Amino acid sequence: MTQSATSAEPRLRVLHSLAPPDNTTKYVNQMVEGAPPAVDVRFFSWGFALHGEYDVLHVHWPELLLRAGSKRERFAKRQAMRLVLARLRRRRIPLVRALCPHHRPLACVLVGSCRPTRMAQV
Image (cartoon, rainbow, N blue to C red; front, side, top):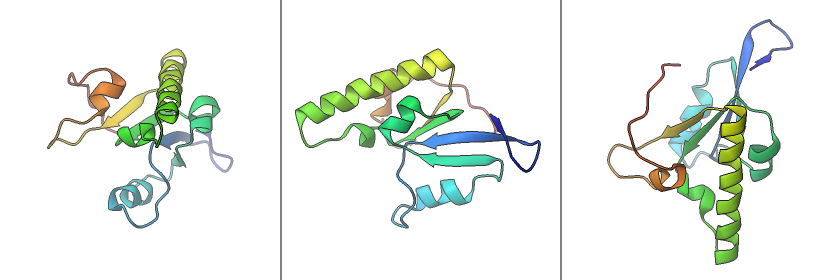
């Protein structure tokens, strides 16, 4: 967490796996508009995920991160995801998964399992 330049209140830097709001996905709009003032929202890029400074990675629809038009590009994205996950473990950055209760998400395959996770109230 970082300190705000104008106050002593710590700021939480959240990297969302989604693209910035474009008013086509209500969920993205809600995530940005509903974020408390002490939360800095960033949107996903592979470069920032691998090298940027953030406190939490929030993943929703993780399969979208790995979609690509060619096998080579899909392979590269999977390798990049492995590096991101290794970075999260090494730096102890929490990974928050948004799971939809009505279907078994591909997140289970990407992150490793679908065993119940402890929920934290923010």
